[in-house]
Length: 518
Image (cartoon, rainbow, N blue to C red; front, side, top):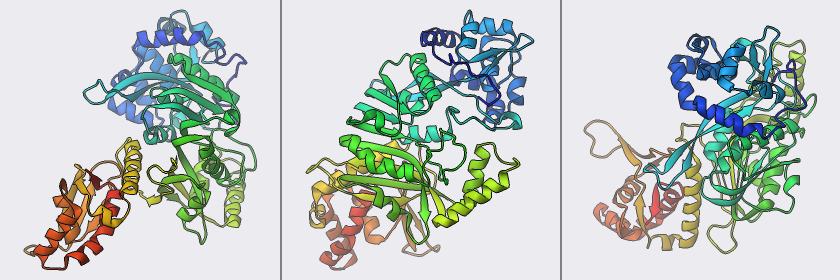
């Protein structure tokens, strides 16, 4: 919702409206798949670029599905007759709730968004292991449609976004008792968490976001979400969770000027992320996970992983993936445009102030990625493991299974212990691993051998002849020692020396998910 739209004090206050609205949306068939079919590939793709004209051209029939699509996705007004046909007797109540407004000519326009959303939940009864669930997410309207200005108010409530989708894809989906959605916004993460957590607590400091999150829980018939007001971990002081998922307001700025609550913490630099990483594990049960989608400052003269490692408290293990690095100037441009300030009269001054602050702080880049922190179980499994990976390449989504596999690998390696003990284990190569060899035509031996994962992070690793032979023979029948000794005999080299050279690489391949303990 822009600063020019009316904001009723009754905004989404009537939770009794939610189930009746859900009934209408269900009857109309206002689902992600139905809307995608209605729009077709061209219009649906154009809408992803915030262009609505192709969609407008294919939604002129006046059916209830077309009416809802025009109102919320295309942000076009509809006639009162079409609105009444779609919403039955709810139009006036939706106006009171701040979702619709009636224009001077009698037409109806959306002033908040209702977005159909499809998610996949774990389902052991399904042949695929997943089942699809249709949800609806209320938020403020998407700004910047058809090239219009995209300036928003400080308490703007962001809807489904690339960031929220990324967090949903990285969040582990195993059954848990209690989960925390820290900085819930419109509540979309809570809707995901409610499918596999007995209880979900959702927190935020934005009063409008809290109203939206409560309404979205009611709209989707979910009663296990407890929405609370407060900053960071204040609303859950003394409480423990099995899983904490958060896309905090991580924009790295000097914390001056107006604040957009959905992206700005009010703290300078990456202090908000550092605070969550440092204090979040205090609110985890043993074995619980804290998962953060975040930015972090890359300081001059300090490796990015060293800075993040310093934030991690004792008694935790962590797997951190840096997906992207942005130049400070590009970063400032990105977020000034996001705030609708590009081209404004004070744009050059804002730009200069922000970049100058970054230079003063010695920030040479901004990292973006996934921070995953586990509270270790004393005496059980891996303890204090830290892995930092720079991986800007394409990955398989959802990425969450990678973190689950990483945890299993670390615990398995901790149980094995020494390299000598690893030699007595039987390994199996992961079924998606493929080998690539390169060399000149006619050459007996390849110049390079690469093993590559087809799933997850899709890691690749260059291996030597011995390592490639071990991977190829790892089917769970022979121990690592037996395979390496056989390879050494074939190659006519010393077996003990072969083991000494290969075992560290074997451990790394287990750690990286190429090999698994059978």
